Length: 409
Image (cartoon, rainbow, N blue to C red; front, side, top):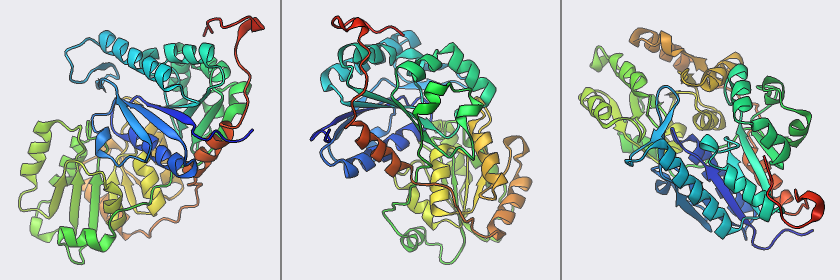
């Protein structure tokens, strides 16, 4: 078979907390646009800032009603005066109608096999019943959560059935010798056979070179420390503790850029803005050009989210990681694995004090830049796998060959 001349690719990114899922999906979409020039893509996202990022050609967005996650891990409608049940029902209808009207040849789901609270299940059933030739792929980041928690979640959400019977491929955005999901999560033999080890997502494209960033900040030859806390929903303590280090502002030997993230509560952003007065600190709420600041930095202080870590590894930057440990342990496991390989310094959030942070920063600045030997070619491997799948014939799940019957799972 030859590649379809104008394949239609549907991407689902649930985006309930932070920016990681959206940024990963957009990176993949850019690579697909480059490698499969005739492709048309439709991205379903709940992100409030999806339109702030550069979009690849021939990609459109469908904005789902936004959800947010409480500290307990429970979801709620982010801004609309609707119950969670009402919001999910609306999202479910939008997703299904998008699939019905767009008629994708391939669907790429980010992370959550059934969607938030199963919102993808009606669409998956529709595609399996009425469009059995559509390829369905799950994109799995390097670490979901601790093995025990993930196994329990997969059991409760019937994820194993979806991996075994619904998804054609599982794209693993990591490296199994760093963390192996097959053994950690007890994946079945059929699911393990579908897993494609893609490596980590390389992100090195910048719009400005380091000297331009330094001129913008007017910092001369001073070392530059970038503090970034992802979306910012739970990053205030890191940013405030960082500012609390500056006991004697005149003695600070470096300049700092703190990116709060667009999801940090307004009152907390205001408190940080007041705290930086007369300090060698630049405060940004959000920038779609974070990679340019990363490249210019001498040290990155951050949480340990997947995308930020991939950018740090791609640029081979010194890093001090302060991982989120609630509600999931994903960041903690990732940070520990990188620290064990000498690719980052680690400071646990329960050990976060101005004095301890200052000591760790001094040690990290004095260390040599890490030499990264991990596989960072995920984007190319993902687009190659998708291109190959668009040429494949796959068994259709049509019972008994007697016309279309609903597919049950």
